[in-house]
Length: 158
Image 1 (tube, rainbow, N blue to C red):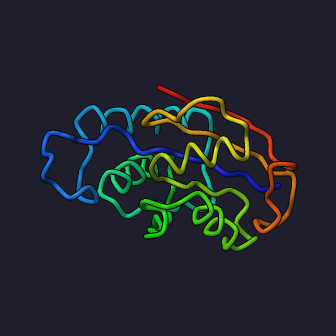
Image 2 (image 1 turned 180 degrees about the horizontal axis):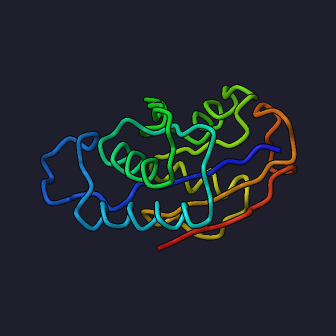
């Protein structure tokens, strides 16, 4: 079985409209929400084998806060493709994951993360900031993940 955790970054700071989107950090609330989500995931004993994040500042901050709170000891991997990705690009990145990895957390942005959750798990709403969708796939290879072997296992919103 393969498990995919889809984590949307927490609240971003929109106070400076001139700031390049890639460099927009979390707000104080975003930091607090990341901590609350990390605590919730730790309580549920969620610890993925690998965390891959968009390198945009707000996604990095979210990934690092959550990783530290759940006890993730490895380095977070950053994948430029996740930033402003189309759905097929995120799916392609996931399918490139080594099969020795059984659980993968992808930290990124909408609309692609919601599209991913809709495509595989039939989610019926937009993923809000600082939310997580857990999808279990009944297969042994990331190249075999498909809507037909996917099951929405959990949806966590703050």
